[in-house]
Structure formats: C-alpha cells, structure tokens
Amino acid sequence: MLDWQDIQIFLEVARSQRLTDAARRLGLDHSTLSRRTRRFEQKLNTQLFERSTHGYHLTEAGQQLLAHAEEMARHAFEAGESLSDKNRQLSGQIRLGVTEGFGTWVIAPLLSSFCERHPGITLDLLALPRVVNLSRHEADLAITVERPASQGLVISRLCDYRLKLYGSESYFRRHGRLARLADLGGHRLIGYVDDLIFSEQLSYLDPLLDPAVVGQAGPHFSIRSTSVTTQHAAALQGAGLAVLPCFMAETNDRLHSVLDDEVEIVRQFWITARQEQRRLARVRLLWDFLREALEANRALLMGEARELVLP
Image 1 (cartoon, rainbow, N blue to C red):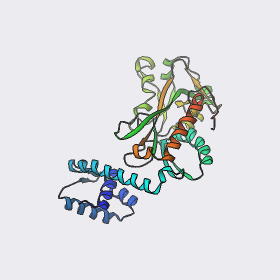
Image 2 (cartoon, helix red, strand yellow):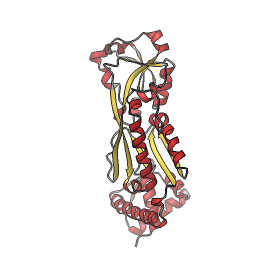
Image 3 (tube, rainbow, N blue to C red):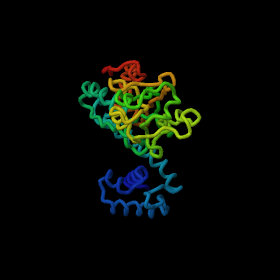
Image 4 (tube, rainbow, N blue to C red):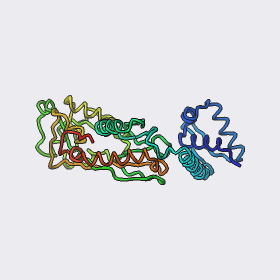
C-alpha cells in the first residue's frame, strides 16, 4: 500500500526537479526530504530519480509512477474541493502567469476592475519574461505567446496583437528616418538576447534582417535585453529602433512607428489551465473576464487605439 504522504513528496520533487525548491514548498528540511525520497525508493525497491548537480530527473520507473501519482492528486484535489464546496465559492486565491509586457501594460490594469468586483478573490500576478509551467503547479492560469503542447490542459486562443518597428523622435533627429527596409542595415537596433529567447514567437527581427535586403554587415544592436519593458525604455531614450507591441508603444507620444507597409507582425496570446483548475468557479470567472475584456480592447491590441478600455 502506497503512503499518500510519500506520493505527495514524490510529486513535488518530480515537478520542482530541485530538492531545495521542493523542500521549501513542502515546508520540510532539505535533508529530511532527501531521506524521505530515498526511503520511498527503498520501499518500492526502485530508483525513481537520477540525481546530479543539475537536479532530480525521473527515471523510466519514475515516469511510470508519475502518471499514477498525478491521477491520485487530481482525485484528491477534486474530493477536497467538492467536500468543502470551494469550487462554487467566488473567493480564494488565483495565480495567473503571463508574459512580462502584456502582464504589466494590459492585464494588470484590467485586473483592477476584476478585483473591485470580486473582493473575496486574491490574485497573484506572475508577470515574467518566461513561460510559466502549469505542470509544476507554478500557476492556475497561464497566458502564453505560443500554443502549449502539454497534455491535460484546457487551451483557448485569447486574442491577437500587432507589433511594429518604433523609434523615438530623438533617435530620428540623430540618425534620420528610414524610407525602406533596406535602410535598416545602417541603423542601431534594440532586441532580445538570442540565446535567452524563451519562445521563437519573439524572434521578430530575424526575417527583417535578411542579408540580401539589409546587406552583409547588417545593423548594429545597441542594446539587447530579455525584457521587453527594458527594450521599450531604451527605445524611448533614443538608443535604437525596436519591434514593440502596439499596446505598449502607441500609448506614448514619444515613439513613432516606421516602415508600416513593410513591418507588420501579428502574434497571438493563448490562455491555458489544468483541467481540474479550470472547473473551479473562481478560475472560470477570471477566464471569462479576460476573454471579454480583451475582446473589448481589440483596437488597442491591434494598434488602432491608444487607450485601454476598462470593463
């Protein structure tokens, strides 16, 4: 007979892949958690984890147990929610993970209205320059720039948004404006750090920098950053030209788009939740609110308006 506490410990270590992270979430001492994990393996007479300086990674046997453990955790969660009636309460905590720029410029202002309507709900907004991992239970909901491929998730296309090439008036005074895409080779750019881009959907500049168009030497990057908010700030100060979402750039009179006929990029945001979380009333409420609020702000997202519409 498997001990439920052993299963909970196994799940947390498997999700975290680092003993220190799992210990913090479980409220256990690091050495205690290590002993409990090894004791569980001894009880099963099976090695569940490959241990290295890079963390704890599941063996084949561990992968097999994980499927059963996730199912057990799902049933336990649903039983607890059903018995306590929390799944019908419009109160509790929701953790929402979202990309940094969208979370800061659009989602955070919209959530002020949601919080006003539902004071019993506490929102944790994780606005990060990376993808939030729902499989590791980092959040209840996630908004991502590409469609997740994981199994067991409820996924829906949330909205489209447009990006353009922007520069400040101070930059154009010093370096001149661009008349055509080929002129890009003689300008300073702001972009992402290539090897730290967390999604290929953010590689906006690659198609624009074809050597056949801009020349073999190519443009010079004055600043690269993992943060689109940092790129926006640098563009405002005239450090270079940057591809930015319209919902960020169009709200400031100091930034102007260039080459609108040649540089027009449209991307999507996707909203995702684990199936058991999606069934909770408070999570469904936020899911529906975001869909409605973003539909009302389609013009802002597509660069056709400059003001956010609060629901």
